[in-house]
Length: 311
Figure 1 (cartoon, rainbow, N blue to C red):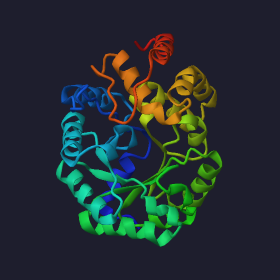
Figure 2: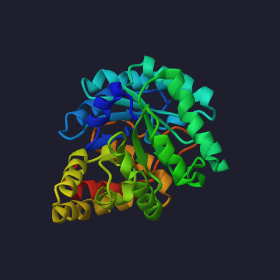
Figure 3: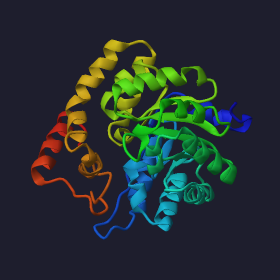
Figure 4: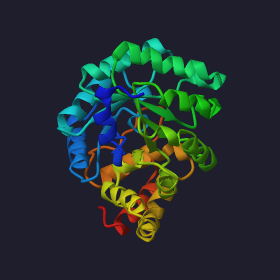
């Protein structure tokens, strides 16, 4: 049963879109706080953006030092105003994750999303449950569960996620396996827990389908770009206007195919390049050893954004 003091936040994020933000860096890998403030402020001004999440996978969280991690969250909190701010939390032990969750809490985050650990590959459900219980006991704040296609997460039985979603600190579950079959099975398995756990999707490449199959909220890195269209699409599905949802999906398909094209892991570099083209970020720097996109790909992306009238 969800803790009573967390229920209001759980309900607040039960619908709409939560962008997992990208972080702007200088060519020397310093955080550009002014660009980040402007980006977050622009996102939360869109009706239907229910929260933002800092330092998730899109934010290159595992590549940062703790001081930068803290500054990123503080910048989000300052820019977001009354809009809730969550933070991604990594750490290859529960001890380290709890320390980082406390850093996020001290920086003003309303809750944290625990990124899967490599030990999830052990396929021992109790280890994942222990992880959430340890962090909850240490920091006593709202938690988001997260299924992802790396960091051992695919090896974790779906039954483990069911048990995690029953924990009193877990207000939401982001399913982002990028596997439509596993997604469907997972959503069916946790469907009976909706009253206490908001069901989210992070499957940027099949969002319309994910909403149709039961996701209440989209927690997505894709929402850095065209956030208004992402809101309109999820609302169209929830309102039963599938024709409109399909129109938006079709309109966005060239951008979707480009941002999440092969290699799919380059989506962060492509997202930042798009934000630079749109004048949101001064630079499109990604932290090493990642590479920026080349000139040919950049021109393809520019044409797609121009066709969407987003330059």
